[in-house]
Length: 303
Image 1 (cartoon, rainbow, N blue to C red):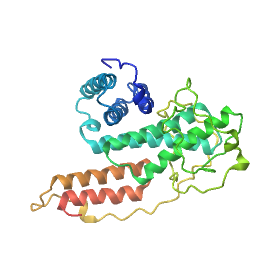
Image 2 (image 1 turned 30 degrees about the horizontal axis):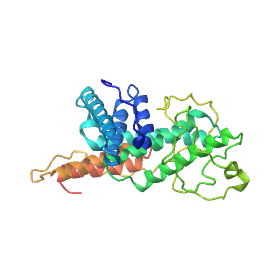
Image 3 (image 1 turned 45 degrees about the vertical axis):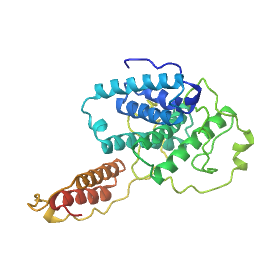
Image 4 (image 1 turned 30 degrees about the vertical axis):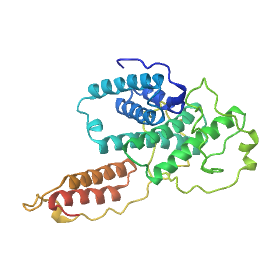
């Protein structure tokens, strides 16, 4: 970065972990670092853009954003919001899936806690592109709750329970310190809260790990490789029924009368994005369906 930020004003305490995540990703993934800073900038402006200390801080943060934007040049993830949104979302979900797989396999450690919490921060960051989907809202709540729960269990010498047992949709770190910084203790919770015998057995069906959703070889949190133990969170993918492809699309050529609008191009981009996301989960059926929709739209101007 061209300039260092001054000490963060107390008013911006809720943004400190997003900014720390940005620093951690300056070299690892500059696109993620950029959007973490953009999130902090946008929300900082809403919190306080008038007091001298906040104005000074936001000015320096803006300098960092401009510098990073120049360094990234014509990167599609910066120049095209839909590409940037897909990049950050896929990155966040990889972290989430890694942590969830470790949790369900009963492997509890600091890196998986940090992965859960960082995933929740990156899902926050997606709001720079608009409102979060209901699915991502639930992933964010679950990741933040899980990070808090496992952190406090380990701190209190208790054995955490794998999976969503006891989840009630609480966001414990909304305004407090998070487990991503080892030097800061999270808010105290009564140890009785996390006694396994006292936990309500609620089903959290919104969080579903799709078949084949394994952690990447080198996860964003730079966590150790898997120990080789089987994870009960991931089922072997079952054979999929691949949808038949419309033969007319194999040699599709743009029709002379088809005039595509900017909205058509945006919809086609979305279909391609959905196809890419489906492939992340080895969902061939959904990928093919969306690619066919994109090709038909681009060829005929109709859906």
